[in-house]
Length: 254
Image (tube, rainbow, N blue to C red; front, side, top):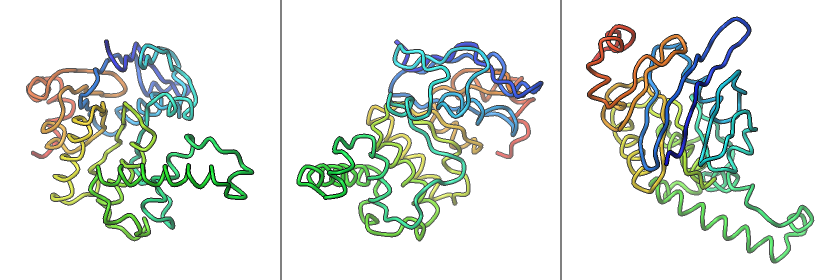
């Protein structure tokens, strides 16, 4: 059984076909990459998968449920989370507070309990804080828990974004250019982090321009060009595909 099935997905903006008839599927506990030139439709595809855009046609099946056109909140509650090209953190809050906020949907106490800080609310807040610390430990961020998020190095902020995504208890994590702007050491650390997510039982789908990252950690790859899927396969198959070399890899510096 596949965790995610994308069937003939298309997204049009007026006369522009940003994504056209794209199909693929992913199994649990895998790292799956989406690559292609700028403007190929990668982020549009991500936005459809996470509810930020409604597909023009086609279906998105997640855990045997059709989520096509569902809201971002509903999709998140079902177990899909994502990061963005541009870091989206609460820069004035601490690291652990950022992760706690990501778990807001789990709070069962009502508004009044929160205002008067009832014993039940305090206990729930403590539980969420402890769980948040566990997510920080998974990403190696425990020593930064009280730091202000906006003061952290770029690579650490990227890891914090992933910790926030994990805090939603997602089984499918979508990472949009997770190594963008990173130096070689930060990139190596992020590759290890992504593999660790897979080993923890998560499925990871990433958009990534760094071919060393893509070829180094992916189990399966699809290639988009002008919104159309032109290839799918293992890293070795993609590396040697003439259409991919012509459309994309031939333009990359290795």
